[in-house]
Structure formats: structure tokens, C-alpha cells
Length: 267
Image (cartoon, rainbow, N blue to C red; front, side):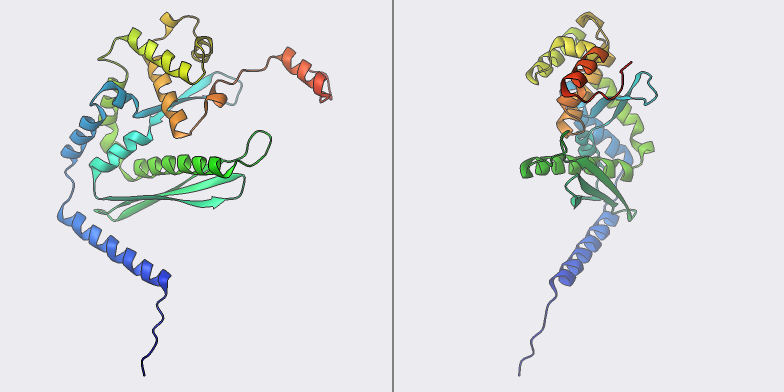
């Protein structure tokens, strides 16, 4: 009489995954990375042209929280993280959505260095409600989840690959992105044209940068606009959030008067 054997799928999948990782670790030990070649490959890929170098960074302005000036936050973009991961080699990187409470969506990124057998995990949360408190549609939740996963991928890779190794080559890529090989005037016009397609007018850009004329926009500001472009692409911020018109005291008084929400005199 034949015996029926029950196969538990989760256990079988786990066993297959362990076997796959073991094979990858063994292969990584046989073909270890050579750091000079890695750095050369990163620089070669990232500096093929100025546009590629520009895509390697993001830049955001954030308030200091003490009523002072805004601070410019710069960093490595998802695109450069992909280049670093590919050149570094012997990495196992994956992302997955691990939470959705109808208010925020949480993505987890894992980077496993198969040579050193060191793994790091990061989590990224993104809001999925509008200003009114309503939850995004299913399609927008998917878009937001994809953006969170891309950022989780970036953060995991940058945490798993030592910054001390890549710092110098990243600075060299930044020099190319700053436009050493392209006329400043051309780069200014390219940025203005790009943001015009997003519905951002020149006066809005000038206000954002704190200038009054296009001639005042220098290489650092063009680099910042390029980084902001990448931040918008990656879902770190939006055009509406970045270029939202600031409400004056007079406008706030009128709005509260119209809506009947003023409970005490405004300054």
C-alpha cells in the first residue's frame, strides 16, 4: 500500500532559498571582487555623459525647524545605487512591501554581501493619504509602494557597501554632474525647460533658489535643480510639495474669515 507524503510548500521554498544562497556564497568565494576594478567600473558607467552623472544625485530643501533658513540635503540617487550594486558584485539585494495600514506603506530593503556574509536591512515608510486624510486609490498606492521600494533598495545598498570605499569615486562623479564639461548657460536653459514641462514657471524657480534673474543661477544651483528633479522622479517629494505657494498672513486671515475657522486674532 503506497504512503501519501505531504509536502509543506513554505518549508520546501525555504529549503530551496537556502540552497540558492549557499550556491551564490560559494560562487562569490571563488570569484571575489577586486576593489580598483569596481571603482573604475562605477566611474565609467556613471560618467558616460553629463546627463547620466546628473541622474546619480538628488537634492532637497528642508526647513531647519527653528524658523531659520532652509538646508539643502544632497545624496546618492537610486540610479547610482544601481550602478554601485552592479559594479560591487556578489550582492543579493531585494525589496518587498511589509506593511500597509491605509495611512502609510512600508517597504523593506535587504542587502546581503555574499563574500563577507554580512546582511543589512532597512525600512522606508511613505504616506498614502492626501491632505484631506483620504487614502490614495489602489493605483496610487502601487505607485507609492514602488517609490518606497526603490528608495529602500538605494538605502540598503548604500548601507551594505562601505562608504569609505566609494566616497572618492562618488565625489568624482559629482564633479562631472556639476557641469565641468558643459556650458553653464546651456545647463540653466535645460533645467528651466525641464521644469516648465512639469508646470513650474521661471518665477517659481527663482523664488525656490532665492534669486531674481537667470544670470544669478550658478553651477551649484543647477546641480541642486538636477538633484531635485531626481528626487521628484524617485518619489521622495512632489512638484506640489516643493513649489507650493506660501500663504501670507493676510491671505491666512481672509481664508479663516471666509471659512469661519478663526478662533483668535491672528498676529
